[in-house]
Amino acid sequence: MEFNTIKINSTFTSPFESTPKGNDENSSFRKPLSLWPGMYHSPVTAALWETRSKIFESLIDPPKDAPPQSELLTRVPSQSRTTILYNFSTDYILREQYRDPWNEVRIGKLLEDLDALAGTISVKHCSDDDSMTRPLLLVTASVDKMVLKKTISVDCDLKMAGAVTWVGRSSIEVQLEVTQLSNDGTDTSESIALTANFIFVARDSKTGKAAPVNRLSPETETEKLLYEEADARNRLRKSKRGESKGVENGEKYRLDLLLTEGRIICDMPALANRDSILLRDTRLENSLICQPQQRNIHGRIFGGFLMHRAFELAFSTAYTFAGLMPHFLEVDHVDFLRPVDVGNFLRFKSCVLYTEFDDAEQPLINVEVVAHVTRPELRSSEVSNTFYFTFTVRSEAKANNDGFKIRKVVPATEEEARRILERMDADS
Image (tube, rainbow, N blue to C red; front, side):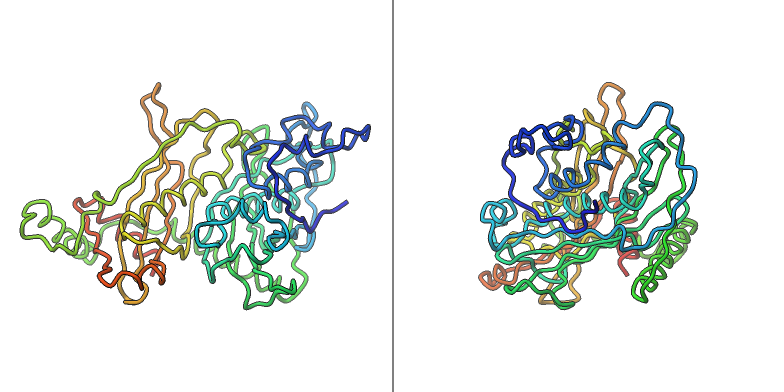
């Protein structure tokens, strides 16, 4: 049975407690605990795990020495398409689980749900429906830019839908759309609130090497267009990886220009521009030990959890920098460089990388969050993820503060100046 539309209900208890203790051998009450990783997660994650439990069973407990998939299948996008419905209008508890201080949906929880849904869609596409073959290990490789097109209220129902739009040899792109439904339950193209593209890579679960994935055959004109657009993005990503990173004369001039003001603040603070601030003075940091409740079905830390925690720190960084409540606009491209395991000591370090004043009514605050996997016993620290978030200031907060002004962020070192230029060039 295929589950293409999933209705989300509020969950305060374990799925075991809400499942009848009947003799039905297919009852989720009889599923092993390993099928319910990350029990702290949002209601969406719980529903996805329950709905796709048969596929997840084969992922978690494959037959010993099972052979790999022998023949690739050809799928159409509709076979992986999955829709999530948030019944905010009728489920008060669910609404409270997602509500932020402005009666809107908490963006951090939404990022978590997006990753969970994209992962389920990729599993559906890659499944060969044969329980005797070795399942693939699917890893989130990157997330393309997410843009919040409109605020998302918790008073109206919400729909999150997606499907596989492109595949390479061992990579998959999943496109997701978040739509705010009207009071009568309908949606239009104008009601699309957020779009995102997730890229997954497939690995052989036994050897860890890249593994081929099922082919994709787009059917409709829209699906063919989405495939072509995704293919163009893939070629662009490859070309950017191959570009030389040498410093040209023009870039050296830009570096010196950026560093000039920072040097004045460092060396002659009494003469510095009071409307500027050093990048290092905008930093915040938090840390945590990764717990088993935060793992995905492969035993690694859930990518959506990392995005959620990074967003919360970025929001706090923008808040303390601006002095007024920030308003989220977008997440730029995110690369998942290294996996994060249960038990790892994870440190999130954030800063305001730069500000933009092209639109006086909507100044932009660009926040960088870097996640480090730290192993004190090995005296090592590696970057696992770098996130870039863009905020502005909520219009109602700005209207109540006549003296509001965002300061210019300047680098104190050449390394900081390079990071700023790289992000400016990536955003242009």
